[in-house]
Amino acid sequence: MTRPNNNTVQALQWTGNTLKVLDQRQLPEAIVYNAYSDAAGVTEAIATMRVRGAPAIGIAAAYGVVLSVIKHHAEAPAHWRQKVAADIEMLATSRPTAVNLFWALEQMKAVLNQPQANPLEAILACAEKIHADDIAANYKMGELGAELLAGAKGVMTHCNTGALATGGYGTALGVIRSAYRRQPIKVYAGETRPWLQGARLTVWELAQDSIPVTLIADSAAAWLMKSGAIDWVIVGADRIAANGDTANKIGTYSLAVLAKQHGIKFMVVAPTTTIDWEIKNGGQVEIEQRHQNELLPACYLKEGSLVSAWNPVFDVTPVELIAALVTERGVVLKPDVQGIRGLKDVI
Image (cartoon, rainbow, N blue to C red; front, top):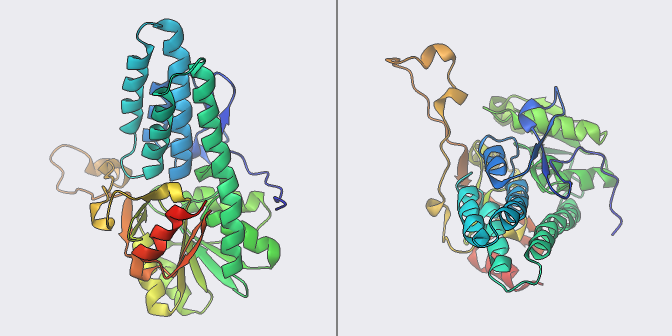
């Protein structure tokens, strides 16, 4: 498959001894990379949402383990494994919902637990493979998802699921990119409060690829759907339960409910690494709660204020609202436990 040109700025750049992380909080006003040389820095970058998006978080954590091995193998040759293990535990605390984080760390631990003539070479190869495999999966999902969009006139997406949220190209945004290459399609992006990933990141990414996009307020989604402009809602995922229930950026569930009401199809696009085979349904997903200062003006943060905020970062969309799950291993239409389980056996 010929890959399209993609000039979008990448979220992560490995230099050989540091991980450069694009500070997505400063986009689109400024393109600023922060360089990290240890696992503590990468942990902080993930926790503070300098890097975000489930696949990108997993990749960043993998490189964080590489940095840990580089540091501790040189500084504490007798105890480096224990120190790296502690760094892995620290990285695991950075974000609780994105399953790719834990999957990537398990991959790195598996390599470290094997006898290696050159541990650093082996652990770096694992991280680079995680990164490369994610990019390849994105292109595959882009083509598979684009097949479903044949004849569609308009699509809506939520949050940011592009190159900035992944190793490159994107999941849901990758599908939109691939579909646009085949035929003109109208793209609508929700602003995605409170961090405005749609307004700051998604529309910027699409503009970099010369794809026209229309930004809407989150609260305008229902009225837009009623107008008949939307054929599909296309989103990514941070964790998918074994039955297909999908945790994604807050506001995804409401879009799925609205899509059902208006007869619009709802697509989830995610690599199989996002499927958590250990949880049966979405009720078992830990939903991250972030600080209320992300929502409240400073005047309400004073001691004794009667105003508080509830700030969940994710919600869970029940599988019965999902028309298609697109993965690098194939598409599951009207997903259920049996259909999703079949992805396990695909090579």
